[in-house]
Image (tube, rainbow, N blue to C red; front, side, top):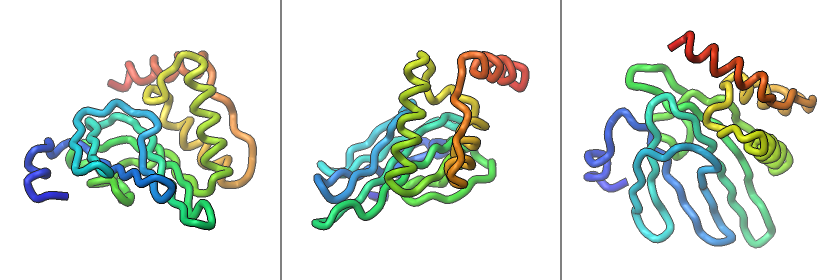
Length: 163
């Protein structure tokens, strides 16, 4: 990042560096409410997320032989002073709700996100425990519970009480 860029982005935001080079590398946001965006050049940009917001960060890389890596991370941006886990291309890091590697796993997560959106629910509002549940179940090759409107309403009420 350029030296002046840190100054222009609020310090309480979580920054994610995105890169796109056709058929070589793709870092992108699958969902999330972007608070700020800065274009570095035609292949790179930095997006920023407000504290406590949730986003999905996908990374893919390939070469002349095919896909080298596919991964997806669902992350909750942290507020200043909160503990966090580090994650490549994410500054300072975040609360990692889901972290999976391999196209088979990424594809399952993308299907789960699509199913949530089909219910009319924005994935940023899904209960964080559901993302952890999906990650844990996929990691041990077991089916996971689908997210339901009833579960979502219960989460929204719980979140109100906790606020």
